Length: 344
Image 1 (cartoon, rainbow, N blue to C red):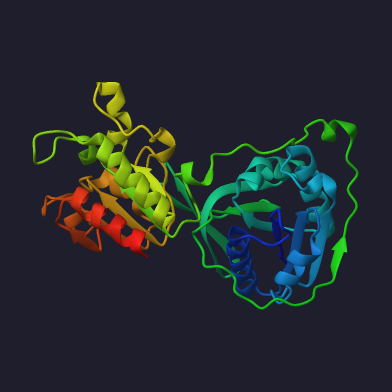
Image 2 (cartoon, one colour; image 1 turned 180 degrees about the vertical axis):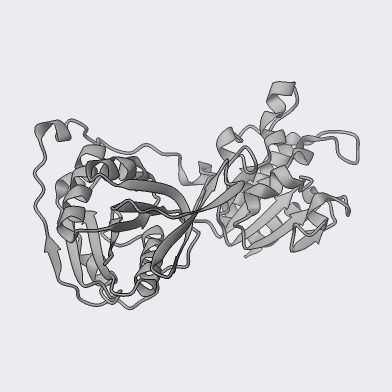
């Protein structure tokens, strides 16, 4: 009989994040598909009761928690110890959690402590005749594999954005708190604060509703025979700030600096989307000034609604890769869009 442990960390405000609710939906899928299985919920954070109440109606047989000041911030030593204690208390055979930066840091290590196996970048779970299968991606998410494992415990990290959130009602849960003894060595790493860009300087927003991707056309010569890089920067940043969108870029635009050409000053390889970049998951995407061939669109495979702006009606986006293609000048379109956003 499988014991499925949904394992998550709380957010700084004590709630359960979107990625965790998606992982909970995957855990419930396994629980529903495995006859005789048991679902247990485990939480780690400064205070876990608010999070337990949020998922009280998830159907878990019990709620286990590790809480305290030592578990406010991400830290390998303390998080791995907490996860180990919860897994042992639950006698978990399958552990499902969100692939957040905090959990990714300790997932494989926790599995090793318990003699188990871990799989990351899982985008789907299913069951058939009592056998669990997971889907995960390889090679920059260009190749998908279906895996099954006999080893237990099996740690499964669900990629954020790949599942629908669990949307059950909140209630009151009786969380059982477990003691964790941390050695002095576990306390050597101390988080003294956070440094991050100002809100208006941040361009990568995983939780944004829209992904806005720029292509090399923004830095090329325009109809008047001149490049307008400064104008392009103002239009793009103006839209990103007004729409609170996340900014992506094709590899060609990111690499133009190495070819001695003009570049958009705010772009880095972290913004790169596609075959050699990231594969983000946003509800909507808008591509501008890029041709839409396979290396570009591979980064869009998880975007639900795809639109593009290009002067070429025969570009790759027009060949079944975009839901809507606007054959227009991106400079003119985005200037008008920014004007309308300013009025709104």
